[in-house]
Length: 213
Length: 172
Image 1 (cartoon, helix red, strand yellow):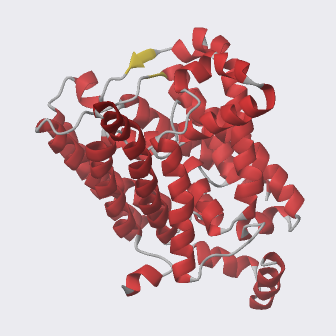
Image 2 (cartoon, each protein chain N blue to C red):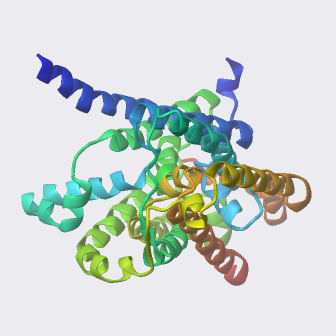
């Protein structure tokens, strides 16, 4: 009996919770507009800052909560281990794919739910192929380039040897300044402006009909 | 409940909710929100279906385990959550080619699919190389102040911005 209880506690409920969290996450991503190729490419072209606004606000709200809960011993932190070879090279390869695909792993799941068929029949298959190639190359890569410039699972306060709350306050302030700058001085949400330059209203209608089959 | 049927919410509202969702994820799931590993395990599971059990012996699949775990369910949930949101607001649309793509590369679905597959290959490969994606490193890792995540997130966008400018501004 105890065994079944533990089994349910350890295996079944994480699946249900994960599913529930996913539904909320997907709902939020879609409401934020980031399940759309145009919004993500707009971010990479620095004309639409929706993606960065969402991510930075999530960090601003998430970080103090997570660190407070860790302070009270309610949660553990899980900073990922890394190296220059992993994070710089892997990050740039990711960025290359990000700009061509126009979705990332989380938002592509949202794009599939949104009905975008290029995500379902193109991007998803590509990601499976890409991860499969990585799995095949992993033994070779892991012995070499992935270990280059290894720094492990350190955090910024640990590496700078500064009290974490000071770093948190500084990061919060920097994000706030960045968001204010994006909002007020830097850039407008001008995705629609670009459309106006490229399209006549009539053509937009024709295009809209063509792509909604 | 009218907000549920709105097409788009303020990015700050969405971001703040994702921040709160992160707290709950640490508290209840005992894991940060992340997505990309489950794409790798699905890929491995498909390969196992085609080539049999020996696929599991690959060192990488020994490391990440070819099972349906909480994160796999999270990604499935994202699809359904996005679908619900899009249906409620009337934003659901079956569509092959995004507008920006069409402006630059024309209206052939085949070319878009090929582009998406190539982009997906690099994205999937890079996500595994960097050991995380825009959610695992970009949101969950940066909020933990992990050095690996800040470097990765900056490189995701640096690479993405350079390549997007090359294709849309330099060539286009």
